[in-house]
Picture 1: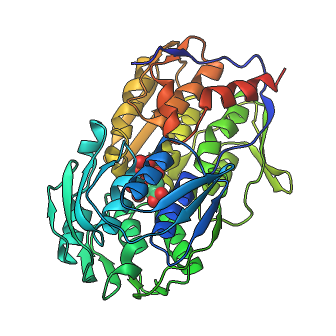
Picture 2: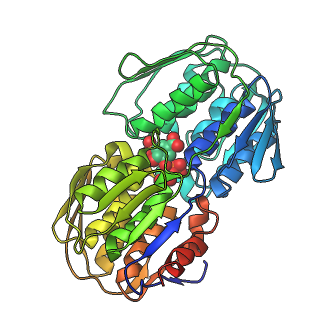
Length: 421
Ligand SMILES: O=C(O)C1=C[C@@H](OP(=O)(O)O)[C@@H](O)[C@H](O)C1
Ligand SMILES: C=C(OP(=O)(O)O)C(=O)O
């Protein structure tokens, strides 16, 4: 266990310009596509963090060459092969995107991860791969892929209501299956649909023929994935705690390089902050958010943007009215059960949060300091940092877990606060 981190209090309204590292979701898709491509690729300004380092290590262990060129990654694809041991850490993208690629490798490939990773839903994607011709022992981490050097592919019907990553993972490798791939979703609505759009967009950018014209059906034609240059956008979900700092202190924060068009769900933070009373402006300097004197509560469906929940919950706990966060039952299968974790931790600081069947109800109540449990979840840790700006004495028990998707969160946070004085 790392030392508790005393969350720094804001001395006044936070005023800062912040540059956020690259998107986890784009970096890890680019790495997978590059490793499966027909020629070398460059991944420019990638995120270098635990999740993306684990992805690079996994693909290297299957035979891809991934080297550094300054801050970029150069990827030279090779025929994928085992034997290999893949450490998924706690990364959903590694545990859901690598097995479909490993299915076309020859040899035994063993997957494992952190203790809590063993609880994350995996059965749907492993059964889908079995249906497409793979031989796998196990139904969750740890499991072993007995790779045969190729996969038949074809059509598979899955229930992806627990995670969009089941669909994305299959689609990314689908062009390399003998018959290509059709994924049909049958079940409650798939969450995080923008992340599937990101997958489809990136496949198309790599020259793959994808048909997503029918709802809940994705068809990928068999064929080459082209090597290319990927330029990674800043991670907009990771930007949200920094924007929240402006929101809760009545300050102003600008995030540079905010894309004007993106498939990243983090872009939805603009509308949510606006609804909570912030001023939001997107221009050539980036995205600028200014906080109001008092934040308003919101009633919002986060089904498409579940990643933003811990940030919104922290904002809601500091708002004037009640907030209802809906459509996020699937967060029980994220890095931790995020609904239970948020309720426990907010209430431990004197808050009033309640779990519903598909989300949270958060009512305003004065908070006091105390220990904030991160549950090894980077976004729980950053939610604690937001609260600590205006509630004195908040200590995050494990700030180091933010390295999952941000290389130096405490440093970046301090830099933002330093910029305010
Ligand atoms: O494909 C991706 O890169 C992601 C998809 C989403 O997963 P879920 O659909 O499981 O929520 C998101 O929450 C996760 O952080 C990243
Ligand atoms: C759900 C998340 O991560 P993962 O990619 O591990 O699923 C997240 O980053 O909020």
